Every structure is written in C-alpha cells, then in structure tokens.
Amino acid sequence: MFRRHNITARIFERQIRTPSPGTSVHCARRFYENIVPGSTIYDVECPDHSFRKFTEDGKYLISFSRDHQDLIVYRPTWLSFSCKQEDCDSQDLPVKAKKFESFFTRLYSVPLASASELICKDFFLYAETNQFGLFATSTAQIYDAPATGGAIQGVPSIEKITFHLLRLEDGVVLDERVFRNDYINLAHSMGVFLFDDLLAIVSLRYQRIHILQIRDSGSLVDLRAIGEFCREDDELFLNSSAQTISSVDKRAPEHMPMNNAVNGLHLEQPAQENPFLTGIKQRLLSFIVRGIQSEEKDEAMRIQSLKKKFYFHFQDYVDLIIWKVQFLDRHHLLIKFGSVDGAVSRNTDSHPAFFAVYNMESTEIIAFYQMSSDELYSLFEQFCDHFHVPSKSSLHMNFISSHSNNIHALEQLRSSKNKATSFSLFIKKVLVSLPFNCQSQSPSPYFDQSLFRFDEKLISAVDRHRQSTDHPIKFILRRPPHTLKFKIKPGPEAGVTDCRTKRISSFLFHPTLPLALSIQQTLFLQPAVVNIHFRR
Image (cartoon, rainbow, N blue to C red; front, side, top):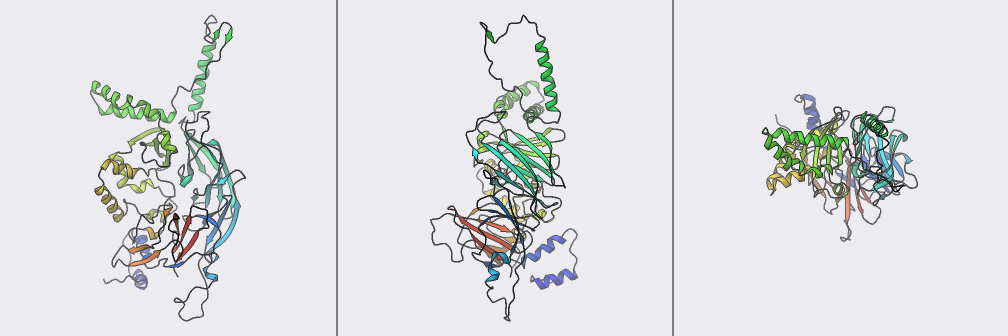
C-alpha cells in the first residue's frame, strides 16, 4: 500500500486500518512527525522567575522566584488570537499574543522558604497519582562541621533541610519533614528517589536511607531507616544485650581493681567508639565473604583467596559509604557505595565505586558489583528500562528512548563501545550514571529517537544545563525522507554579540503538546532570555 506522510493521509489511514497488536501507541506517536513546534517567539516578555520543569502529566509548569523564597505554579494553555486577514498563517502574531501570559496562566504563588532558608531550585519530584509535588528548602552548608553523634568525618552539614509536600491543584502544604544538622544531596534530586508512593532519602552525613510513604491523605509516614540498623527490632535487641552486659559488670566482685583510679584520683576514660559496624555494612561484608568462599572448593585455595580478595581490602570495604540509592521495585534498592571524598566531590568519575542490590524485606544484599563489572554492564545494556522504573500510572513515561527499547540508541552505544580504547574505562563511563536521578528525563515525543534525530551534545531528554550555541538545534526525521522538521534556537534571534560571556541553556519540553521553552542565561545574574517554541 502506497503511503504518504502528511497528516491528512495519516488520519485517513488511521480510519481504515487497525494497527498491529501492541503498536497502537507507537502508531499514534508518529503524528508528532507532522505536529512539531516549528514557530518561535524570541525573547518573550515573561516574569523574572527560575523555570524548573513541566510535570510529567503536563498539567503544571513549576517555577521559583529569583530570591528562592516563593513557588510559582502555572497552567499551560494554548495560544488563541483573532485574525482578520485571509491568509493568517503568513501574518505575524499580534503583540498581545507574543506574551508569556498567552501560553501560561498563573495559578498561585506560595512562600516556601523561611528567612534563613532558600528553595533548592534543582529539586522537584512529582507524584502523578495524587498530583502532589515535593519541594526542598535548606540553609547554607557548613563545610568544616565536626563529626558528632555518629556523623561521617569529612561530610558537610546543613543546619536545616525541609521537605514540603504540596497539593499542586491549589498549592496547599500538606506535610513537611525536617532534617537537622544533616547532609542530603538535593542537586538534581540526587539524594532522593520517588517510586509510586515510596520515597527514599539518603542521609550522607549519618549514612541512613530513610524510607517514607506518601499517603493519599498527603501525609509523610516513616516506614523504616536502613543503615545503622536493618530490621525494626535491631536497636531493641542491641540495647537489651547492652543492658544485660551492664548488669553482669555491676555484679562483678568488689575487690576487682579499678583501672581508672590512681592514687585516689579518678581519671575519665576516653569515650570509646561503637565497636560494631553498621547493619548495612555487616550485610555487605558477609555477602562479599560468602561470594569469595563459594568460588573455591579447595580449603587451602579458599583461604588464599580470602586473604587476597577480602582481608587485604578489608579496610577499604569498611570505609565505604552510601552515595546514592534508587528503587528497582517496591522491595529492592540499588545502592551505590564509594569513598567519602567521592561523595562530596563534584566529579565522581575518578573515584572508585561499587553497586549493591539490597532486599528491604529480607535485609540481605543479593548482588554486589564493581564499577567495571562486565556482568552489570550486560544487564544495563539489555534491561536499561528497569533502572528507570517509571510510575505505573504514567503511560507516556514508558516511551523514553533507551538502548534497551530503541535500536538507534543501541547503535549509538555500540558505536561508542567500538571506538573506546579501553573496554574497562568504557564500562566505568557508562555505569557512572547509575543509580539514575529520579524523574531526570523528559517524556516529550520529540526526544523519541525512533521519530527524530538530533545532536545529543546540544540537547537531549536528560534534565541538564548545557553550554549554549548560536546555531539552531536541528530535529530531523528518522524515517525517509529524512527531512528537517523544525529547529530550536536558544537566546536572541540575532544571536549574541559578546562571545566572551559564557552562556548556558536549558530546555523545557511539554510531555504531550508541541510546546517548549528554551532558557538562555549567563553566570552574572542577568535576566534570562526565554524563547517559546510552539506549533502555530
């Protein structure tokens, strides 16, 4: 059957043909090849806000005030204007239609931060089922804070971190959770992961994974804390054992000499550190030991292998701390371990790291991998979508392109692998992104690599600032005739005259509509240049 690719032919074909089983959504998404954001309003008049992102269902645009005190939420609408000419498409838009308010309706503004706190502009998580938004505010970091109360030496401290749970429909704050004198990595939501109604918050300073549940009523409920203890009754058991030992010591014979009494003067003993490793660390070490023991059947070889692979590196294993965590499902966590220096460093590529899969129900480590593990890379290459764990209620999040569901992304990955000079270094470079940051990718169909081809060095589905360019970013059809469908150009229409100023750009694509924002800003707190890209 001869096929045309214009939108009229596609609609007619949809009426007379039934798509193959399991392909109806893919066939419907091909309409985006004809419906593209090809028109641009440059340097649009808009409020001087820090725009964060669209929610995954496209109902809200999240932004923050420039002083990082207030949350401002907009509802995306669609441009509407009247035209008296016969050929309206060739006419320029009216002045009123070129304003920000023509595309977005302001719903409300909510003050979130107190006088000493600031909103973390890179942090936002969305619970689509109940349309709840999770935001974070914090005070300034204290880099040389003393390690007291079981804190990790070398990890900064933040006096107050507050998580705010809002109902985005009306901006009502439903619940708050405060962490004091702690350190949680809020940049790009690295220290927090949301899976359906479960929330994992990583305390780097105290090495705890707080598991919370977001109830339908809007309350945050503690489920468990993994770190020092793994089971709910571990602390009770250890405390009861300590009391038993203490009572035995008190019944000791009175003629026993006191070590801290010299010539009638009582000298204080230095405070002893906790002799026990944390629960999660003991689970990890025991799994490593059992794995090494099972490799060798001969007893002599087993002892030699333990000396070489475990005891020689024992202190290195003990010094590992939790960096990041993500849910694999409701019962399993993927935990990334590494050194203290790597946890607080901006660039973790040069620091060694390990991955562990932890079962929260059985409190067992069920897998452990080095960062250069061939086995983990093979799993990542074949089942990359399992590491993204999209929400069950969000259908369009299941169509984000990856090398396990898209042949073009897989070809790019294999091309990079073939060009790599060292396979081990290539694996480290690929796996350094694990665990993935929560909700870090845009579900926009214009990033679907089965539909469009674009330069991923300049733009991609990953939520990251990128160095700006004066050249427009081209989106080319993946299928024949491979024509240019639209361009995205950040910054002023005429370009920037001062090439010495470093400029960065961010792109906010609506998840379903042909609508996008490109935001170009400099490092000198000048007003950002916001362009609106839409289908006219």
